[in-house]
Amino acid sequence: MKVGVVGLGLIGGSAAKAFKAAGHSVYGYDINSTITGYAHLDGTVDGELQPDEYSGCDILLLTATPNAVMGYLHENAHYIPKTTLVMDFCGTKKKVCELGFSLAEKFGFTFVGAHPMAGLQYSGYKYSKATLFSGASMILVPPIHDDIMLLDKVKCMLQPLGFKKYVVTTADFHDRMIAYTSQMCHVVSNAFIKSPSAQYHRGYSAGSFRDFTRVSRLNESMWTELFMENRKNLLSELDLLIKSLNEYRDAIDCGDTETLCSLLRDGRIAKEQTES
Amino acid sequence: MKVGVVGLGLIGGSAAKAFKAAGHSVYGYDINSTITGYAHLDGTVDGELQPDEYSGCDILLLTATPNAVMGYLHENAHYIPKTTLVMDFCGTKKKVCELGFSLAEKFGFTFVGAHPMAGLQYSGYKYSKATLFSGASMILVPPIHDDIMLLDKVKCMLQPLGFKKYVVTTADFHDRMIAYTSQMCHVVSNAFIKSPSAQYHRGYSAGSFRDFTRVSRLNESMWTELFMENRKNLLSELDLLIKSLNEYRDAIDCGDTETLCSLLRDGRIAKEQTES
Image (cartoon, rainbow over all chains, first blue to last red; front, side):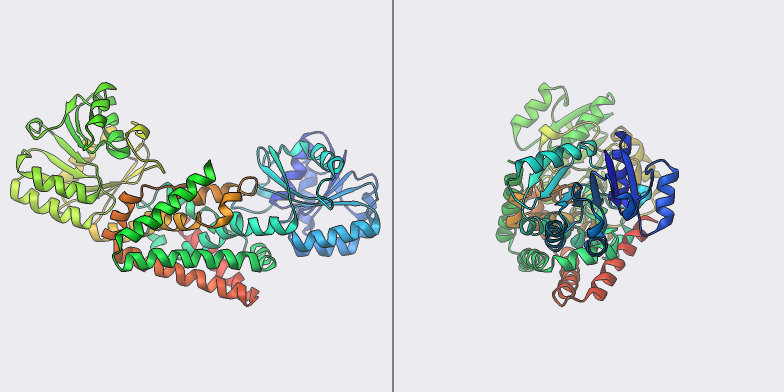
């Protein structure tokens, strides 16, 4: 199989390494040509992916931020062969899928939106690894929800990445869920670490603090773009959490143990329900 | 060494198991006599700890909630031999240390407040294990800050628990730090899991969600007591976080990418500073 990867960061680099480890031919492109050169040198890619390398490309992965992916698609869509499966791996899906589907229809290739549920608190090619996606869930946003043949083809082609589970959904539902399960964790963790107390945590912290602050170290440019693209969903989750925190706050302020205990019990039960 | 453990929950059970594994003689007490019976049956304790068993007790660990520990001290302090080292393992230190120090002075035993930085999202004897404290940090609140002989004795006696690091501080500083590093993580995680989106997380969540919601499952009675005892410190951290979240909220609402990016950058830098 011939694989093209655009964007050799943590995600793209990991995908390129996984496809290469499975014996496929991999061509890569990064806006920073030093990275592409390095990936060539370490054997991850067979060469730089330029539009004249699209020929015979079975799958083209676009693994950059939504704006970068959309810019790339605008510039290069007309070079993409009709036989190529194009997938973006962006963290938000609405805008990029709308563009991908419309350009696919115009130029004849196939476009499927995707979001692998894997990542690290670090970004960049140097942290990429062939096993990053191993065991993770993969969210797919296909142009037609129940196109079984296409979904089967996608699953087959992505096999080297080792996903454990595939979820098929719409861009809207994806963005609504991701605002909560991923974006909110990043915002809240990032706000949490700003307390002046954080600087004295050594010796006074354990697992809950370590887990809670892991993703506060984030790539601010990438996340600003992702948050802004998903403003409506993220705002509604943020407002919900702030309202909820104020309920605990008021119960504690008033010394209302009964209300506080009942708020904590509701949370414990909600957690148990997510696990059942 | 003869060890007494009052409260055979996750913490007390784990301490009892660690002392027993190191070959010491262990006597335990729990308000639920079935637990004590079970701990006797599984070989963790040599018998039930009643005041008439205090004789020859080298160390007496009080591992229940602050109110339960204070109640126990009020009732039993006059039975405690002068040679016994008494330690509480409560999650807040101010009230319990004040009482412990004053009763120690009155009856002649030694009291040291302690808070092991180890735990689980589960509570109860059935989750206890001899290795719970292994590699964790231990916070000590001694009656006199620089009593080297006493600190050395404590460290020596607690050796079977396997702490990696000891921190010596005051009850005030402990409670201020713990409001942030532990209590806040529990409150925020518990509020976070209440979003209706949580029930659909499967397939849409990965490490950040798992880490963020781990401690939302909590023992609401115990935490209500701990939060209420530490109201002032917890409120000040909660207000700080709510204020900070509102800054992100407003930047997102206004589409102010520059402010959002700068807020995220500040958080990233704060995180890096906690690690340096």
